[in-house]
Each structure stands twice: as structure tokens, then as C-alpha cells.
Length: 527
Image (cartoon, rainbow, N blue to C red; front, side, top):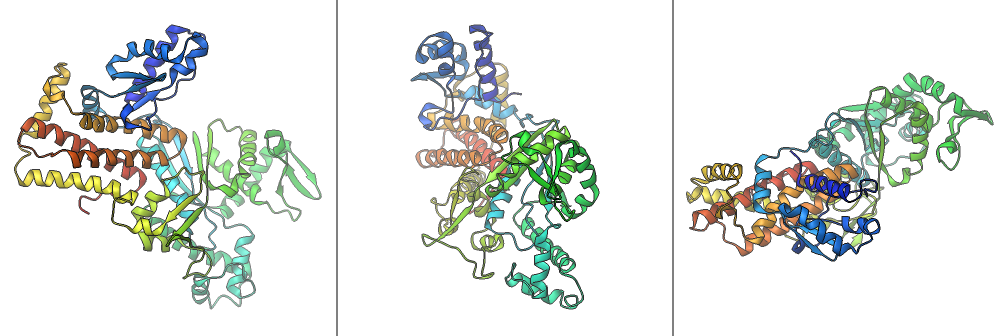
């Protein structure tokens, strides 16, 4: 079964074919209008057809509108808006299960992949929230997702960690290194810096795993850079050999042939692979596992790596999609001022500290309220508020409110016959008998329409690999429900009105719960 956005898009494509099959513009999914008074979806197709048809967009929109009557269209300034009719939305919500847009696709989702030289900080937390939410959405849309954490345990940072533990370096200082010194105190004197650093990194990695588990982020694989390099670096170098050259005793890859701003060193003068060299080995390992999509979430400071990895993938003959989501930094605010230092570590603020302060739900939701490529201001005071100002509280409270409505309905015995009424409604849909049960007030119609559009939002979020659209949608749905709840009494004496309003509540609750689950946030029944 198609989503409503897919149905409208398909009809638009056929309309465009009839107009001019040789000049069909790119037809996007209908979007959600910024103003709810225009309905649940809109399309700007008339503007794209204007240069082809040599007519004003408003005239074209009025013509197209006639072909889309089942979706209750209206034209405003050339845009075609849709207020989804109740018979369409109820039928859809009764029968639709999940999108299948990524069905049959094998996806590797690599994110966080922090150096095992210290605890996860608040920047890692945002990367974790984004990567996990996208992974959940891809799974929801039918994708076969493998989550992977790449352990950077082969570089100079491991030696520097060992030097810190030995007391001959200060690269990594904090409470955590003092704890590790105590754990490894019997090995410090007789171990070289790299060996000691490697053992320390494994202790830190276990703490990282605990933090991620606490943050509701699970990984199927933890892959060691050191092990992958040992196993695949020779094969990777053989693959890129025709595109390499030697200079100053180092081996360079001609990444400029693929759009990079300069060629990159893969093997240093000492014969050891660079970080990029090891990355080639790792991405060869990714290719060998037969993934259709390689999705990764990186910090914004890694933007320069995209072209060089694309270079290797091109040379290696990877035919799938390579998607990189860059995540900007997090600015933590408390009492309206930026918080720079951790009281505990004396350097950076850890993800564990943030979770202790605001909780997993608030941290995950607020991390996802802004587009990943924009800086996020995380207001700790706001995140801790148990009020409508707090965005996660606002959405969760809508779910809890609906749960309380159904509890009250059961207590007052006002829900008897509701399930049978729904079955009768399904029969009426099959018979196309749209009687007074389908006469809904505008607030009710709009909420059901939003519940339908939710699935289009998930699909678009997946295609953009961007979960912030979903937080925005859930806040809009919660706002519509809270407004409806304030204006209308739900458990009225009139049974038909009561049942219709309970149906609106039920569908809103299901949608909010599903949306929060995709973000890795709980949906409490009581608050």
C-alpha cells in the first residue's frame, strides 16, 4: 500500500506525462506546509510546469487540481494544498503498516567511531543520536541495517595515551586516565608506550560501550582499525597501485583525479600506512561484505575526508551509494551561558555527565531538533524543565494525555462498543458508504491527516538521512493534539462523537509512540 504522498506524486507524474511526455519535471514528494491552515501536504508542481506550458502557475494549478479531487485540493498562489478527507485518512490508517522504500537494501551504518582514548563527549552524543535515529528509520522502511563502530586503535593517539599512562606525556589528562593508571599499575614500568596505550584503550572502549548502551545505542559490530589494516592493507594497496606514485619516499594516491584538492599520502616514509591508508583497507572490508549503501556520520571537521574516500571507492569499483552525514558542534548552555569545561574531567563535558543532568530522552530528542549540519545550542535548564517549553516533554505529554483519556474512558465505562464501531467503520469504507461517522470537525480531520503524512515524513527523512524533520513533525502533531484537547471534550455523552474523538486520540497516540521510538525516545503513559 502506498503512502498518501506517494499516491499524489504518482498522479502528478501521470498528469505531467499527459501534458508533455518528453519534458517531465522532477516531481518531489509533496511537502508539509509551514502553516497548518493550508492542510497536511502541498506541491509546487505548477511552478515547474510553467516554463513548459507557457502559462502562469496559478492557472496550471487550477487545471491540475481537477485531477486530484479525492485528496481535497485547494490552490493558493500557484501552490496546490491538500486537506486529507476523513474517508481517505481513516482507510489509510486502518490498513497501512510500514513503508518499504528500502526493502531488500543492505545498509552499513557506521557512526560514533570515537578514538578509544577517552570518554565520549557531548559532540559524540549528537553523532550517536543522529546515526542511531537514521538507522532506526531505515530499518522501519525495510532496510537491512548493520550498525558498526570503527575503533581507531592503530594510530599515534594510542602511543600518546600510553605515554600519558606512563607519566611521560600529557596528551590525555583527566580523572579517567588516573583510574586507568591504578588498573595498569603493575604493567606501567615494563611495557612500551604503544602496548600500554592499547591496553588502556580497551578499558576505555568498555566504558564507551556502557555509555552507548545507556544512551540506547546498540552496535552489531565493533571493528578494530589495527586488525582490519593487518588483514586488508595489502589488498587495498594492490587495488589502488595504478593510481599511486612515490615522492619523498612516501606513496601518494592521485585523489585529485576524483575531485580532491590535493593527492593524499597512503604510506608514510617509514613504511607505515597513514590514517587514510588504513581507511582504504577499512572501506575495502566494507565493500567485500556486499552493502548497497555505506552510510556514515562524521564530525564536521572530517569534511575533507569525503573526497579521498570517494576516490578509493571509485577505484575499487563500488557501485552502491556512499552517504556521509556531517554533524556540527554542540554548544552547551546553562543559566544562559556557555559551559566549556567539565568539573569532573577538567577538559571536556562527557556524554555521561549530560545524561546524568537531563536524562536520556531529553538528550536524544534535543540533539535531533536541529538539522545536523547546523550548530546546536543545547540548553540544559530547558531540557530539565517539566513544562510545555521543553520540546521532549511537550511531545511525551501528548502521549501521556491520550493514555489518561483511555484510562478514564475505561474507568467510566465509556469505551464499550468502541472496537465494534471501528469494525463497522471498516465495513463502511469497503462499501464506500461514507455516512455521518466520517463527518469530522476540522481539528479532528487535521490530526488524522497528520497521522497519515507521518509516514511520508519518515520516508523523506530516510532519503535525506536527516532525523530532525521527524522531531519537527512530532512537535507539530503534539501542538495540534494539545489544541484539540483544550478545545474539545473527548468523553462526551453522545456515543458517535465520543468514538470519533477516541479514534483521533488513538491514531495520534500510535503515531507519536512510533515517532518517538524511531528517535530512540520513550513514550510514557504517565508524567
